[in-house]
Length: 334
Image (tube, rainbow, N blue to C red; front, side, top):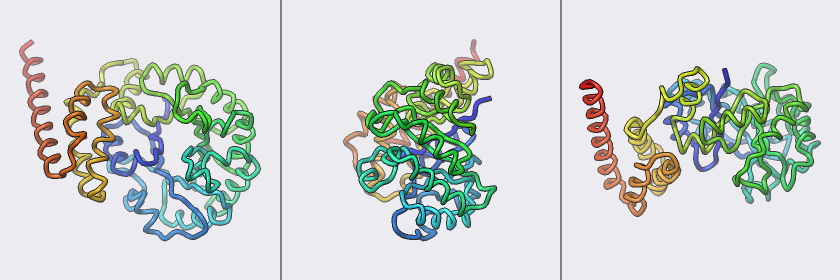
């Protein structure tokens, strides 16, 4: 059975969306948004602000373990911060070698490190030496910065430094998020290392998942934007793997209560200026999978008043409840 992991997505899959997506189900684990490490030892509250799951056993409300991702380029400070993080008992520590953001890369972090395999090895080794032997240490990489010439060297460097597992986003930094993802390159990396490799990139449907597994030769998959656009994707993959396709489909009426829960969490936990934008951001991606999300997005895209949005969400939930009730009645009459 494949492992399915929720991807770290800066500015998208924060603790609020992690909570909701893992409640919907299908996941074996998750990785947090990155905690950025520069030239200082971060205070405990910084880790907990980004990963509040640390106060609940490093698990989401649904019980899914969350590894904390660190991003930085200085081995000394990465090691210091990893050691501090260990005291908070994370489910594991993940290292970011894939972030394509210009600001991050300009300061020597994320994907730009894929130009320097030896520096990657030093950084991973420094963190490995700073944490207990039984603390899981993993890494996430892209296939390179401008090209894929150093992909195998970078993967070997992560393994040699002490990473126990590797997630490969099958595109370079320059390729960004443009299709296609080069899943066959994940297979090349799998053949070049002895540690487990997890596939990531451009998995939007069950068919994409199957093609990725076939092309890469790996069993485990990390789901990113595809699970945000179709929150039932992990469950659908589970159902397909179990030979019962379409038996665990998440339809719009099923999703609306989760959308309402998301809005409530956003209002409870995020700054007022962030709230409306976060709902619109998720609805925008949901349009890819649900026709009803297009209607919802067009309705709220110009709204900014929290109270008005809250009223609209309650009305949406009431309509979805009526639709579910009508569907259940129809099934009973057949």
